[in-house]
Length: 327
Image (cartoon, rainbow, N blue to C red; front, side, top):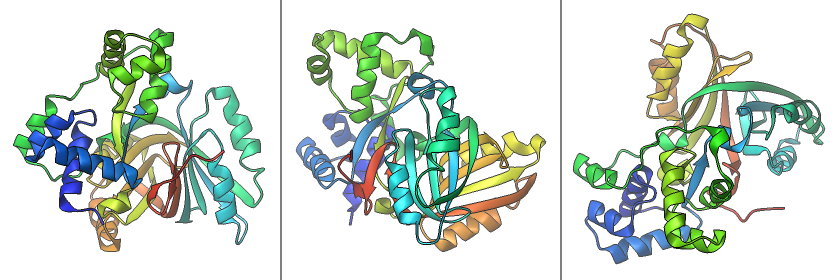
């Protein structure tokens, strides 16, 4: 079980993932050594990692896709395990409801999407059928989801070390930046000294490269912790069908909902996908019956409830913790 101080530290890192230990200690009103020990313990227990969320256009040409997979009876577990090993699979989960397995995939090039969706995924033993939706636009992603635990004064202290992205041109990413992207993706708190040694650059050059990459929004550091560790024991992917004139308004409202980890406008049979986390069934029921009810233009919804998360943002999970990478 995570303690209250653990949750406070995670909340602080959600605001400023690269904040120094000294700044985290100041915001949380504890010693730097206490913060350091707590951070190391959470990492060693495979509960917490700070990674880098790479902007889509810097990773691939084309947007991700949601994929729902129906399996033969009794095959959902083995099929999900096999699908999770695909390098294009960012997220893989066993689900109940609309599908048996839910995937989020991102192919390096648009031309490879047909092979993945029409041949490789359907060819996995136990897969009986698939359905996919193309992401057109994301309104919120996991780096924006927050535990609302800290005061305004604490948030102000942490904001000193926030980097506000100002946009970039994917065609203007240099070779050193592309090498750095790989380092930041695995360790969002990597120091200039560590990056310099890995890239064979001076520390000052590595520092400027890191700051440029963050300011341009090529990589956005984020905290990775399974929601169940934070008390959100129920996760669902909700596909909503909405009349065209109401899509943007509904998507924007959903993106502001406290449950929202990922909300996207999609092309397919659905209009908007809401990936949300809830503390329990009552909270999810309130969302479906109370929060969605006043939103205009919703004509249908389909829910996939996550039973087991196997992979999230390319990192394998086991029982709510990180697992070693698999071949």
